Length: 97
Image 1 (cartoon, one colour):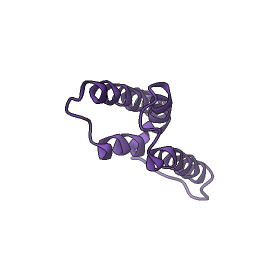
Image 2 (cartoon, rainbow, N blue to C red; image 1 turned 45 degrees about the vertical axis):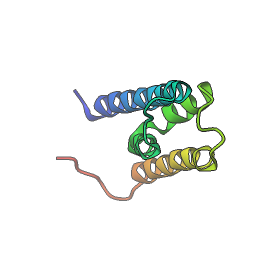
Image 3 (spheres, rainbow, N blue to C red; image 1 turned 90 degrees about the vertical axis):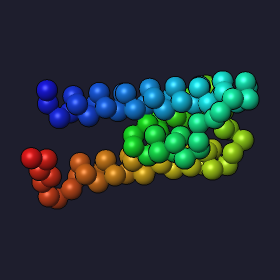
Image 4 (cartoon, helix red, strand yellow; image 1 turned 180 degrees about the horizontal axis):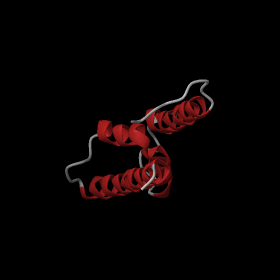
């Protein structure tokens, strides 16, 4: 399995997790059950699940009244895009092994 395939599978999985966590937390909020900590939602976004978290946030209408989610999640996504662009256009070669 090559590195690109592995990275794509990781990103798909972590974005599905981010999406699911938003839905689960919304469900728990309605039931007044134990909630998923906001820090956990942000950590999932930071490790690559920002797209899934943003989609889940608006699909479930969850955390859309909190400014730090409305602006924070897209900010994380923008930083991730910039990081990827910098790595792809870096003047040096990155060796994984």
